[in-house]
Length: 492
Ligand SMILES: Nc1ncnc2c1ncn2[C@@H]1O[C@H](COP(=O)(O)OP(=O)(O)OP(=O)(O)O)[C@@H](O)[C@H]1O
Image (tube, rainbow, N blue to C red; front, side, top):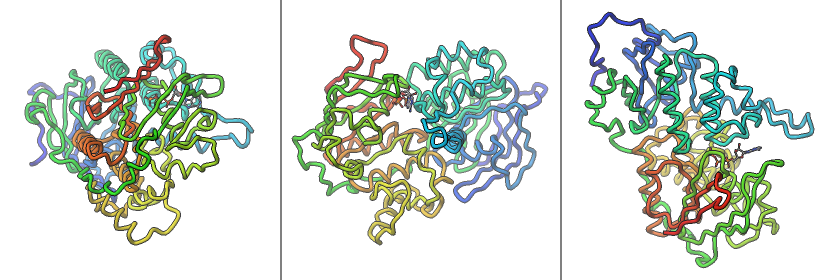
């Protein structure tokens, strides 16, 4: 199929705010070619691209971070705002680099989130609508994933940009925040803001978007009015086939049934706080083998903090009444003893992967529970790692640096890293962030089958309702606004 522009009007053409013509970009991991993409003032565009289609290259070009190999005619607006996965990672790493904790002899919280909002006054209403007032004094790197995404968007808006490009802005936001963000952006668009949504799922595209383009295999295929392109795409816009093609045979032979009666997790009257600020208290949760558990709740309520208690990554795990795999935390076991039987994927783990290793090394590192690979793997381990990359459609990327892969591909590699050890407990905290619809569905199908065959017990956090499958046997709902019932545990 050749790239085409559809539905060009006969009116006098407007001067584009952003114009990319005859552009080619290439990295070791992917490529991008754009014959013709023009965004005019006042339009709202959606660019739909599946995992690995080249979206991150487009984001890097917009960020001015990647020089095209053929630039053609490339015009970017002077006041361009961009929120991308790579940009958020960069900000996080900058915060870590500037961390003066050792020098100060007390924890250095880094840049307060509120300081990123240049014209704080102008966006006070948005801060309120997105429930961010209480995090403005908090260090940016301490924010929860949803809080960080909302602050990153407000930070760009507060600079007074002409065009705002947002990569997966609804990933990681709770449903109320998704609705509020879409409503607020719609109002700003009515007021003249030009928008560019970089998405993988057409269901995430606000209905008021005026234009659409489809990015497949590094090529922009269609560009034009949203209603015309929607019809041409038949409402799908997704990948024909998922990259994730692992079968549950890869998990067979686990010791998932060892100690079948004993809870894998038992937390009594659990609590968490940061300094004087309580995150939650009075939380009890027991997870027996096969008791697949879904956790939901609004951004910042403490879901990831609970997961960190369970995985041993939060210092308060020792002060809580917490048993993992039948052993009381603080009873002399090491963090490696705890993690040996867990496969973990989380936003936190993802952003801590600031390593130089290649994709294969990251997969194999799951066998050692390390971030990065620090010992020579056996040939069996290398073969197994390669098999996992093959099952995830990434065999040709084994030797590429992990950080050069697209965000979605990195997620798939981290999933392989979690699964390679055939864990008794799979701890998946928003594992599908950055994945397209086909890959999300394929992962959930795989987990459903894993549950049916009793190969592992699954602890799962997601804001997306289409991921709340019936195989979850219990559902822990955080309800932070409700003092009478702050948690609800539903059994199915
Ligand atoms: N080191 C820290 N110091 C202060 N506050 C912190 C720290 N770490 C996390 N927090 C705060 O604790 C709260 C809970 O964070 P957590 O990541 O557990 O939320 P969450 O429910 O997983 O949110 P999300 O849905 O956005 O991922 C957030 O408001 C966050 O800003």
